[in-house]
Length: 100
Image (cartoon, rainbow, N blue to C red; front, side, top):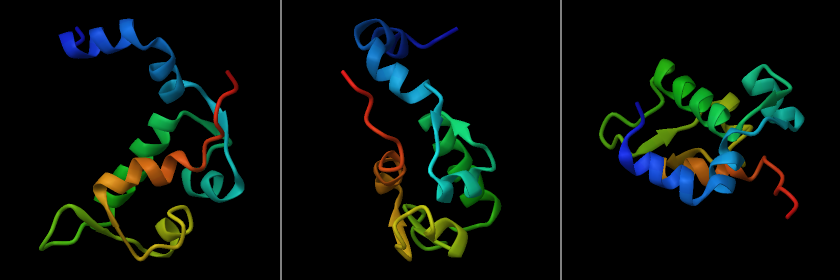
């Protein structure tokens, strides 16, 4: 059962939701990180987030900061530290804009 807010978002903005879940061919750097040639933007974000959690890359003093290792840095524009709020924006850069 979906929460009411999510149902409202899906019905009002079907294209916005489709952009999150549509499969996309990935560039080589992201393909190596994810281990697949196609994935949705949401799926890619979930993989990155699980990688961060598995490797304890969150700053212990400030959980809103991610300390990037070499593998994560390869897809996050070479940044050594990233705020959690920046993650979706940096991941979105690897996904081509859908034609209107």
